[in-house]
Length: 255
Image: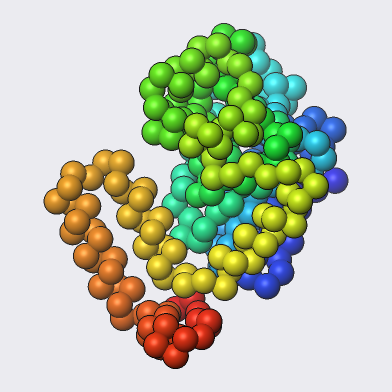
């Protein structure tokens, strides 16, 4: 059975983690296939969606996939997880995490690395590393304090308690939590909406916001000017202005 499913439709690449029997735990095979799927989507799609098969989004590292007494965790993180997470963060396309169920440990980090997280109301997030004597990884210690503040991030990681999707939305950890019965239709609709949008502007938004964590004001203003200059030369900008003046819906080409 393929550990990752790939679906391409109308500019939207849907990548599904496909190990439902173990709640899509991250085996070495799955990580490799996921990186390959992301690379494929970068050249084929205008939007990427990452979701899970079955009742869970991702339960984190598959502890049965390695010899935990002998494995070099530092090497695994540097050689396998870091390229995967950097690939998501640096992908020029909007990446949506459609979190259909529990996102635990590295699974939570995988979701939070995406640009937009849409979760079913029954979904949850947990930084449960301390329960097996480990520290948070997979980018969790980077994203969580930036999204929810130090106090909430520290509590979530020390206690390892479950955060519901609705609570995550209230905290600002995710974009939105939606009812389970409309979840699939909703995230597909949001992905389709982005696929019809101005691709160069979306790439600029990602670059600007990702860089803002490390830039001072002068550097960020300079980056904004640079990116705006690039957008101002695009077909999308010309189409957007024309559509505004003609009072019609813009038809963006992504260039």
